Structures are given as structure tokens and as C-alpha cells.
Length: 387
Image 1 (cartoon, one colour):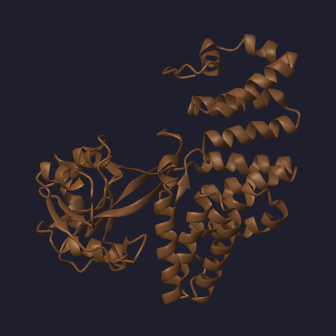
Image 2 (cartoon, rainbow, N blue to C red):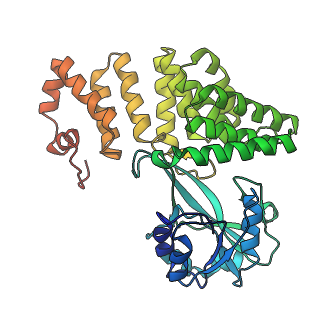
């Protein structure tokens, strides 16, 4: 890891790996709090590094200190999940591959909620002394392209939880300013590089500066196309249409979203966004078809950065909205109940059911005859029995 002033979260991270690793290599870039002392209390090897505004170089400096054959790389605001650790004993994975991807679970919102996550597979384990290095001054990544080309990247279902996108972390103004300044400087040095524009768009998006975010994501898409990368990475289109939906730019989003879905037909998020756009354009049957396709697709494809619920409870919720607009309140009620069956804490579905009961006497009467298990859902009571 590379760290600086992480005393508020470093213990959680180190606790999660203390019984999994043979050595800990920590690169400290100038902590003034108790970070170094905490790391040393775990018998970590701590190396001081003069910060030079380059995350990849700091990460590679630490990599050069590693003595073991396999490396797990983390950030201080992450932890390795307790479940599924038995997979680490699968020696075939570590024999047959040079790198292993894991599900990276990014929490967002006000607090830790396992229904408020964005997830993607990311290579976090890799063989040492095979030439793998980190690249990019900011938002550094491990260059394992050669391993991908040779089918030497496997998958291990060992989740890593990342807490850095929670609101209280995003609102850290100093981190936002630091990241933006580094990215702008990188653009000055390499103006035709597409990735800095994407990361700038993400920084502005998280700060709700949506016009700037939209400008940079479009520049990123155009630069990828100019570089001959067609189609550009899928996450750019996910961000683009998220911005258009948040700004209610329905005419700007349609019909372009159809092209994005055609480019990535197995990306459930884009299909969901197309459904939202169709719904807001009052094309309710077409939107309903979209959301039902999302439910069929599910959301287990970790090849894409995906928001949880877009292939399950959020799609069921919008299915209910569509049925309401199509004057089928019974099917709407069932769709909202199915949303709550998947995510009992999904408040919009609960509110929609209450509104139906208040407005429709027939629905109120129907609800009286539902199984008690369904009624408990409306009151936020979890149910372990099959419904």
C-alpha cells in the first residue's frame, strides 16, 4: 500500500489481511498522524517516500521492496471481506495464472449499505518479478495487458470493500482539489490522452458539477475514437448517460442511448438507463420491455462497472412505475413487492405501495388478502421464508 494520514481507516484494512499475508509493505508519503506507528504495530515494513505527485511511481517503489512470490495490492480505505477466504487455498488458481481479479465493491451514499454499491472485477493479485508495473500518475492501474493477452488472468471471488466513495470521503475538498490539479497537469503534459478526461469527469460528477463532467466525458470518448479505440471503454457511456439522466436531458439522451446499448448489449446498466430515458419520454411499453430485459440479464457480469439493483430491485421498481402508467395497478403492486423481496430496505418501492393503497381502493382490498410475508415487507421486516 501507499498511505498518508490514514489513521482513521488503516487499522480496519490491516486487520482484514493480517492472517492472510506473509509480509506487509507500506510506502508512506508524508504522514503527520499515527499512521506509521499503527502500521509498525502490525509488523509492517514501512518505507518513507518523498511525494512527487505520481501514484504509480510510489506504488512501484513499494513493489520493489516486496520479497514474496505473489502480491496483493490495496488502498488504506479498503478491506478484504471475511467471506469466501477459503478460495485462497485453491492452489490451481495460483498455479495456472499470473494475475487474479477480484470483485471490487465500491460503497457510495451516506453510509455503508450493501445495496448502494458499484462493483467491477479488478486484478489485485499478481505474481512478483514478472515485469508487472503500475502506470498513471493518478488513478494508477496495474499493467497486466500481456497476461490478459495470454489468458493468464483468472478470477477469485474474494471481495474487496472500498469505502472511499462514501459522501463523507468524497466531500473531502482537499482530495478533490488535489486530484483535479494532478489530472489537469497530466493533460497539459499529454493533451491527447483520453483517460485523464474520464477521471476528471468522474471527479466533477461526484461533486455534482455536471456540466464540467459532461464536457470531459465527451472529450474522453472523442479521444478514444481518434486513437482508434472503437468502441471506447463502456464505463464512459455509463457515466455519460448517468449525467444526461440527472440533468433530465431526455432529448440529448435519445436516441444515442440505443447506439450505446448496441455496442455493449450485455451491459445491464446501459439497458437500464435506456429504460429510464424511455419512461421519461412517456414511452411506457418500450420502457417496460427494457426493465424486464434488465431483470433477465441480472447483474453478475463483473466485466463492467455496474450499479447494484439495475438488474434486480431498481428494475422491478421501474417496472412497477411503467405498469402504473399503463393503468395496471395490480401488476404494479406485484412489481413493487418483488423489488422489496430483493432489497427490503429500498424505500421508493415501499412508498410506491403505500401510495397505491391510498389511491386505489381495489389495491387496498387486494392487499388485505396477501400473505403475511408480503405484508411484513411493507413494514420493513425482513423475511427468510420463500414467498
